Image (tube, rainbow, N blue to C red; front, side, top):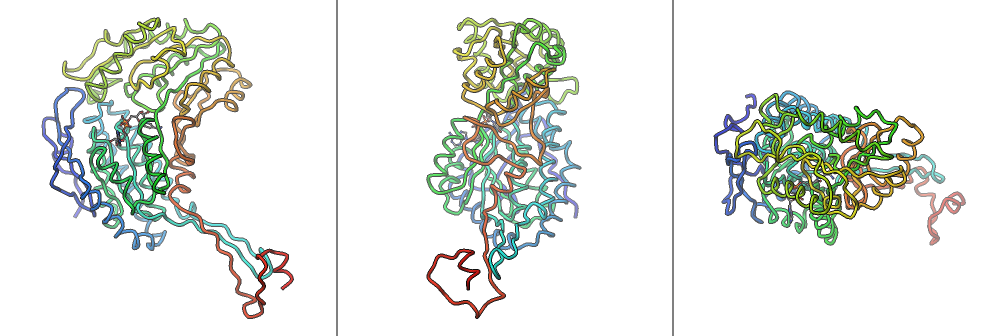
Length: 516
Ligand code: NAD
C-alpha cells in the first residue's frame, strides 16, 4: 500500500491536531497541556499541538533505545538503501512540505521550497555514509602490530530545533545521525510543528525501522526532560543564544555531548569599489527574505568609506515595489512574522532606534501589505546612522529591520564584527581580491561570503558560527556532523607473533616491541 498524507494536513480553515511520533506511529497521549498553532498571514488559529509530559519523553527515549541495538547492527548497505528512499520521497513531496511550512511559519512558498531543498542536500550527503564512516589502518606500527580506527554511533541522540526552519534544521541533524547508526528524538518548535510529523511519516515510508526516528512535540518541559534523560547521549540544538547557552551548560553538566547553535547579528560589509546596484539588491534579499527571520539574514549593513548614501538609495528603490503578502500568493516576496508578539517586538526597534538617535530611512509600518488585517505584518525597514553603542545594533532583532553603520575603513568593519558578540555569518562586497582575502583571514565569523550575502555552506561542508553563535566544538552536518554523531575507537592488534611474545612490565612502545 502506498503512503499518502492525511487530507487535513495544513489545510486552511481546518483545525489540525498535531501530536508526537513515537515508535513508528502517531502517539496520542493524555495531552495534559497543549499549544495553539496559528496561520501568521491571517492571525487565525489553525491547529493545536500536544505538549509532551515527562512520561512521554520517557516513552520516546525508550522506543529509540529499543531500536538502537538492531539499528546499529544494520548493515551500511541497508541503511543506505533506506536513505536513498528517503531522498526520493522527500524530493517528490517538496511542494507539500513547503505548503505546510508556509501555512504555519508564513514564509513565501518558493522560500519554503528552498529550505526543503537545502535539507534534501543533507540527506544526499548522508547517502554517502559508506565512504564517510571509513576508518584508518596502519600496517606494521610495530613488529607484527597493526592499528586501525573505527567510528561508532553514540546511542540515542536528540535534536531541539527553532521555528524559523521547521523542515531544514531537523534535516541538518537526523539524516546524518541515523546514517551513523544512532536513533533520534526530535523536539521541534511548538510554533510550526506539522513539518516534523510529515518528515516522520516519510522516514517510516522510506523503510527505517520503528523507533529509529521519533518526534516529541512540546516546550521547556520536553526540553528539560531530554536534557536530564540518562539514556540520551548527545544533544544538537539550534535556536536563540540564551537558550543555546542553557542547553550547553545543562547537558554538558550531566556528561552529554552537545552542539548548541545560537543567534546571530550578521554583518554585510560593502567597500566603495563594489558594484553598488548588486550590493543593494543583495542587502534587500539577505535582509528581508523570510521577513528577516533567518539566522544567516544580513542585519547590519556596514558601508565603508562613504558608500552609505548610494546603498541606502539603492535599497529604497528596490523596497518601494517589494510585495509583502501571504506566502501562499505567488506574487508575494515577503510574508508575515511568526507571531503577533514577535511582530510587535521587532517593530518596537524602530521606536528604540529613533529614540537612540538613529534615522528611520524606511519605515516598514507604512509599507502596503496585500494581506488580511489580522496577519502579523511588518514591511521592510531600514535604520540608518546606527552606532555600535545602540540597542538596535546590539540586539538580535530577527525581523525585517536592517541597520546601516557607516565606517571609514575595512579595519573599522573588522573591528565591529570582532566585538559585536555574535559570529555566525559575515559577508564582504568588493571588487578588490586583496581586501576580500584579508577579510576571509581576519573576520571573526564561522561562515564567510565574498560577494555572496547568505553564505550557508553546502551540505558537504559544515554549518556553524563563532563567539555567541555556537556553544560546543563541532558544527552541524557535513564532516563535523559525522564526527559529532560518532565516537572514535583505536584498535591495536597483534596476531602474527602470538605465543612468541614475552611479557615485560615496560610501557608498550615501538622500540621495545622491535626488541622482543
Ligand atoms: P528559541 O531559542 O526560542 O527556541 C528554540 C527551541 O528551544 C524550540 O524548540 C523551543 O521550544 C525551545 N525553547 C525555547 N525556550 C526554551 C527554554 N527557556 N528552555 C528550553 N527550551 C526552550 O528560538 P526560536 O525563536 O524558535 O528561533 C529563532 C532563533 O534561532 C534566533 O535567535 C535565530 O538566530 C536562531 N537560529 C540560529 C541558527 C543557527 O544556525 N545558528 C539557525 C536558525 C535559527
